[in-house]
Every structure is written in structure tokens, then in C-alpha cells.
Image (cartoon, rainbow, N blue to C red; front, side, top):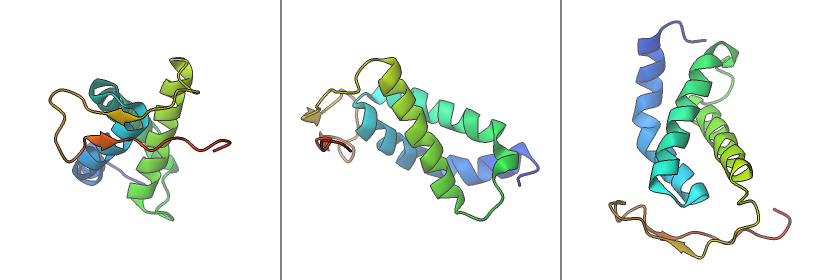
Length: 106
């Protein structure tokens, strides 16, 4: 349980970049990934009392981020889209590259 905004920010902010990469790989959009990270932090903040410390904070945030991205994919009707590659203008080279094809049924 996190008592303060500062404690939450201290745990969450260092994970921002890797969460952005995770969301970018799912959404194939730099801007949508940034929105997803913001939504992830908002959902996590609202549910902070449900984090009991039994799992890693990082894993807890990844689960939230994944759900945020899946919600965005469903909302945008892109659930059956196959992504070959993603390169966005201004995207750091370390983030650019091939997006794995979704496997049938998973």
C-alpha cells in the first residue's frame, strides 16, 4: 500500500520508458503508447490501495499497461490487425523494429 503521491511517483516514474516501449509494441503508435502509459499510471494510482506488495510493482504496472493496450485495441477495432513492422517518426532507434505477428488463438 502506497501512502503518498511521492512514493507512487518514485516507484512508477523510473518505469515510464520501458512501459512506453511495451505499449508501443502492442499499439504500433508512439502517441497511442504515450496515452496508454498515462492511462496506466492513472489506473494504477486509483487502484494503489489494491497493491499489497505480494507481487513486484513493475509486474503489477505491466499487467495494468497490457490491459490498457488491449482495451485500446478493442476500442479502435484493431483486434485482428497483423502488424508487420512499425517505425514512427521521432521514435528512438532502440524502440523501432519489427512487431511480432500475433499467433492464432493467442
